[in-house]
Length: 280
Image (cartoon, rainbow, N blue to C red):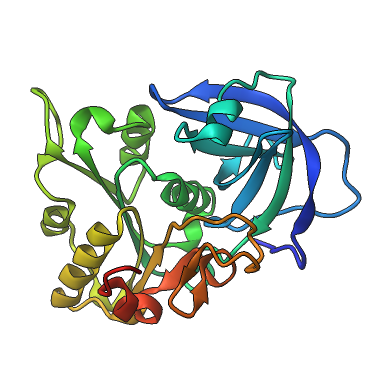
């Protein structure tokens, strides 16, 4: 996918063209430019936008996918603060500002011809969903697609219908895990790392993409290493407090990296030592 040479660095007006409630505290807004922009806008799965609520502030939000066409952009948002609470009140036709896209996305070009293992934990699954949609849209370019999703409680799982739809696609495997499960939970009860026993990995031809809590990603990477998956074939998306998206404010500094610029997607070898350091 073509990447913009330069992101939009001052907010432009976007209209809400669709909204959907995913759960009690998660919703999706699909946005379209209010006017046809003179500049070209495109994004890589794994990148993010800064959404600006006029008079309130702005927050970094992962780009979920294109909407019904290539001029609409879906963002999945969790109500966790003042800005996201305000965004949750927007209706179709309302206006919001956008800057972006920012950051380094997933290595989907390098993954061509390979099996792709996606591991995602918790509710922050938007970066992984963008991978899935991209690979299914370009299915012939990739090998097997294995999707492992772990949640703390089985009731936390969103996108239930989408997981079922993905599992029905050829050459796609979906495995779900919950630390605590309700009766009739169809997935595994236990840690997400235990799902690795359910997939057959061609370790010489697999690329791994992970997002979720740092401890989960670290434990999964260590488990994959014991299974002989090369560490250089493991990528992860990190989350930090990104306020400017340009590496100026320093809020997202992670060791010597600024996650908004060098990330949010990193090769595991780049950040392996930092993931074990308390305070980072």
